Image (cartoon, rainbow, N blue to C red):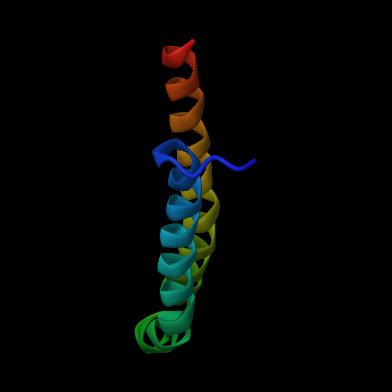
Length: 74
């Protein structure tokens, strides 16, 4: 039986919000990188690297939050 309460839907909602946010970022990323490349190719590469790393950073922050939350619940 699945948990449909607030505790059961929270991870799904958080993952959906993160996924939509990252999808929007990756959708506009090529245009932003082309615009930045007019100024400096290094600037465009830096933005691309930060955009990709932000995806992993968000999930790392989420995992840390969940670990702290689980420690306080125990």
